[in-house]
Image: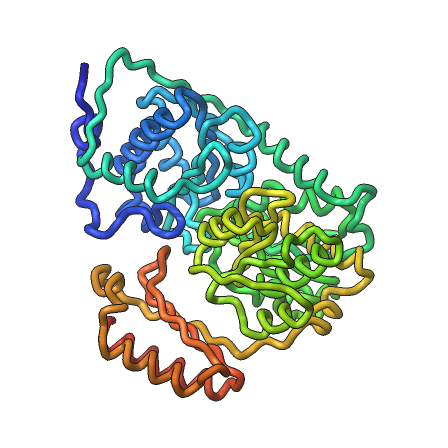
Length: 467
């Protein structure tokens, strides 16, 4: 019998940060620094122990985006998982929601996606999914981290090594499910749609799906490129999408992030249609069809006040959560809500999926324009006016200061001052990002000038006392 810890079973790990490895969306950081082959191997091994404790021996589905470091991390995770005695299915390049779907709808006992989502090319990440296709909880993440840090022992006897199998063909099951969730007979016929694929995972599925459903597709940033993923494109930079939609006189356009779990749209005039608008449109349709229990939507603290008040004006209810699709998901399960999401474009519809899915959301929004007989421009025009909302990121390299921002008395006084001045005509949200080394400062007000004033003031306070 062997006692195994992360440090004596395989390779010595580099020094790990004192802060938690797992953030709001798994483990994320710069490849080659935090995200190394030894770390991924250890995460794979200890995740394998948790999966076995919960479900016994079985298969883990691994997908990845197009980053240059994704192959390295996939092989390292595979080594750890097979060392733990589990089978590994390599899905290859595919969207994060594909991993979630296949984990929930095959005999796999878990899933892992290698991606840093919307982050720049030099970053990468590891997202872990349960057998139900949902992200693992805090207890599982803590147990894995304890093993990785060498604070957890496991007794091994009669080890049976797992095997690795290429299973890229399984991705077709996911695309078939997306197609079957939509009306039949080419529901997108007659639409000219621009797709910004961000050099990422959506290139594998999105263009073919939209074309098979009848759309004329113009794809930009349309091939896998690990050096350029998310660079000046995709859901974090809509300029090229807006330009292409207007120049080609397209009906609408969609921009995905690197792993295609989120999407933003633009109408024919290049105006942005974010997650708040998408929730409003989709929620209104489901409400009118009596398919939205209690007329309830789940959004986050980032949701615009204009959206919230417009939704309430038509008889809807809105519950806000902390930022992060896992918080939205948890509130949906708790309340029985069928639709929820984030302003950033993560949208979850339990009628069709257990996770946020950018490609699915884009397909349904495009179909919705056809069902209503309205252009996306008309839908946006007839919905609601947003409050001016400014979001700024302030880089704070010191992780301890970043995590303890709420204990900074001068900053708290400044926040209170801004909130008191704006009253019910504005909001302030300051938080540490769970995916990047920044403090995010959001100010929303009924007047743009007011939002600018307090945004600049609070950013100055963060820079003075934390940066």
